[in-house]
Image 1 (cartoon, helix red, strand yellow):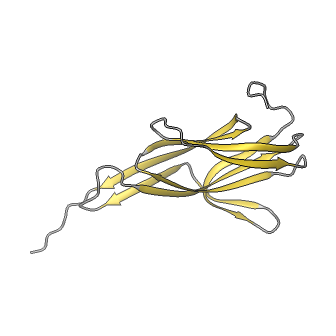
Image 2 (cartoon, rainbow, N blue to C red; image 1 turned 90 degrees about the vertical axis):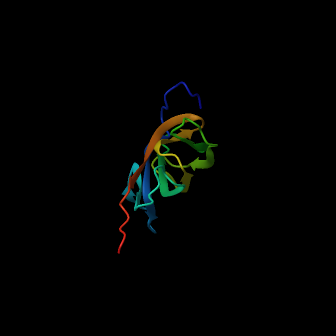
Image 3 (tube, rainbow, N blue to C red; image 1 turned 30 degrees about the horizontal axis):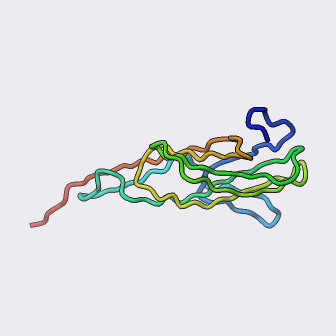
Length: 151
């Protein structure tokens, strides 16, 4: 596909979202549970670190495409951009489009390991064409409580 011309006839992006998990029922109906775009890491106590400790953020990324007139195979890439602007190596998947209204669903379970708060972007590309960007704002909240000494 050309990266300059608009997609005509498909495939079309039905959704791209971040959630806690995706349920896929026997009848192929999907349910995205706890959709979010912000994750807060909290630390409380007298020794709460000033900056974010090493953190793992678990989530599912649901990408759903409708073929429209598109047929055959295509390459889907997901590329993470960190708050620093650093782009991680993209994940790549091959999908196949059969019928005009049969969705192609990708459910990607992530474990984002990081020590960097800020805005992360997950770029969804189809055959090197940017379809959308999904944001994740990672925030850190430290609450230092005074230690209580008992006499």
